[in-house]
Image 1: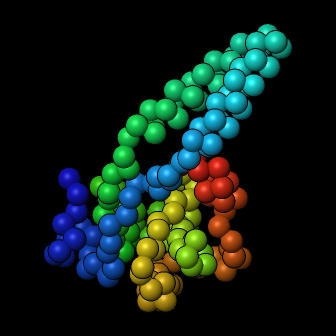
Image 2: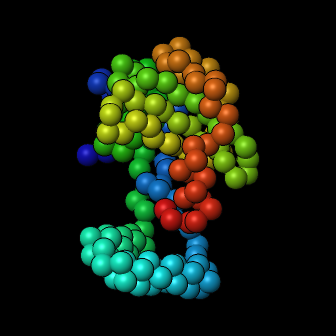
Length: 168
């Protein structure tokens, strides 16, 4: 059940900032992109069969199926909120004790993201698009509860690659 961002919630505290974001960014892809991906995929399949590496063949086929299924879905919109006790992303609440740090990469118009580092081994960070929100009050508020990682001056390499290749 999504959090009702129009009122205070006893579990999450007072909402300081809230906005709606898409689960992931869906890129417009040209015919050229599909042709290049098809050529790369077929080339890898031919190589894996020639080398008799059938596990690699299976991985390529599964990756293609997953990419196709992902392409057929539209990203869902989720509520994001910064509260007095943590952050809310969709139905998931992260208390500040679960988060390690945060950083903001703000290079409009291409990159306007808020990143959170978590203490979890499985999901060590996640990103929230700032959209048209002013990052300064968000930074000021989060600095009260979390350490800002000032060493992070660029978006992570994986995010840059995803945007360049348009995989997400």
